[in-house]
Image (tube, helix red, strand yellow):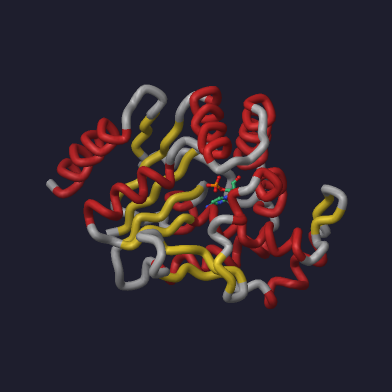
Length: 225
Ligand code: DC
């Protein structure tokens, strides 16, 4: 079974997908982590310089960017590896977040990452979350969910998360970054963030994680009928 979860930035797709994966005991893939890892590569190799992405250089470097998920002993979650290095922590910084949408618009990069994502759905059940999972990566997914929440609720959740990690950020900066990413994700030419006509919408602004799972169990019952 393929479960596709798409939606806006910071609306809790990862936590929701992880809950589902744990409950059904299936693989969980965070496709955004792959775009974040590619962005980190750009920062580390001067492909992003003074806030500007060199698209040609990124395209020429694609063969040198190896991104994969691996099970690690120290975490229940699969971690994303960039050229054999665990970058699961580094990719969540505001620096990476500030440029990831610009990197994600590059069609050649998307093409390459979509191929890897599809391989994870070969012969095994997976819950994958991102922006184009139901529309492009797995158009035939059995379950498609479009998750959202109000921008303020999303910014608060992200702010709390980064503050808990000790990052020095302001709420306004987070809200601005989130709205900027939404805008680029929704308006880009290749695989924009859209709600597929066969996706079920869930606004979790006022839902607890447990409420969300109750909603999901109900959905899966209907799909299996
Ligand atoms: O889910 P996230 O916020 O970690 O994703 C980071 C960025 O990656 C997001 O701003 C857009 C991009 N992304 C994408 O273009 N397609 C996906 N399937 C997943 C993420």
